[in-house]
Image (cartoon, rainbow, N blue to C red; front, side, top):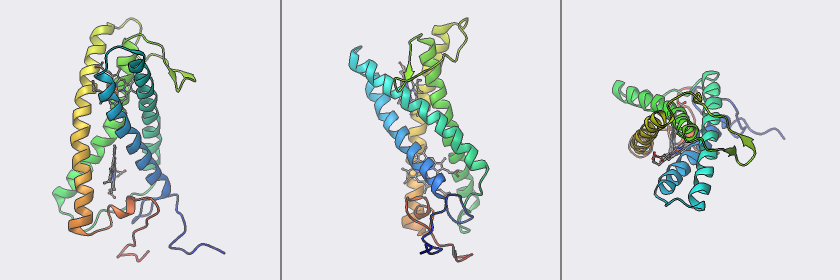
Length: 201
Ligand code: HEM
Ligand code: HEM
């Protein structure tokens, strides 16, 4: 039996809904970033020990996974239409949503990159998940401690910024759902499709 039109799983986005691939990218990356924020913050406070080394091994592997997934996500983003925002949103709300999403994309890439620079400056070997050797991304001639210190400061300030942006992002999603009662949150949830009042999809 053919699945009904409403229940059919769609891989690509439409003008009213996120497809399965965009949702999978969103929630997988969200989970990995939130895990890594907690892991990095906790590991940073540990005394030098095998536990700290192990925690950073996982932190770096997860962080570099975020980098590759974010690049694939952006590729998918630019080759798909995005669902429209509700028509009752004001100009400043649209601008805020757009700017915060762009910043989240920038941080998804810049956080792992700055971490990779800290790692390279520390001259410490790393195999991603114990399998793939990770090359250094700063030239051997660079002043390692100066570049490393700069990257540490950048990594730290991006950590603070992404926490603020995430709080805004989640509050925004909840406001759409509870106050505006529109489909913005529902259409990003797994296994959920929002019907489009305009096209009646
Ligand atoms: C680290 C965690 C997260 C990151 C990095 C993140 C990032 C993003 C980005 C970049 C977009 C824009 C998608 C695009 O236009 O291409 C987006 C959309 C969205 N996010 Fe998140 N997100 C995170 C966590 C969450 C959480 C916890 C919620 C739930 C409350 C949420 C709810 C949404 C919703 C509802 C949308 C769709 C907005 C729309 O339809 O225009 N996100 N997210
Ligand atoms: C999703 C990506 C990432 C997130 C959310 C993240 C988050 C964090 C957080 C919250 C801290 C503790 C606060 C700080 O000192 O900045 C931290 C520290 C650190 N992270 Fe990451 N990180 C990510 C990716 C990476 C990657 C890919 C690497 C290396 C390949 C890395 C290497 C480090 C190192 C070496 C530190 C300790 C910095 C220091 O000693 O000051 N991180 N990270």
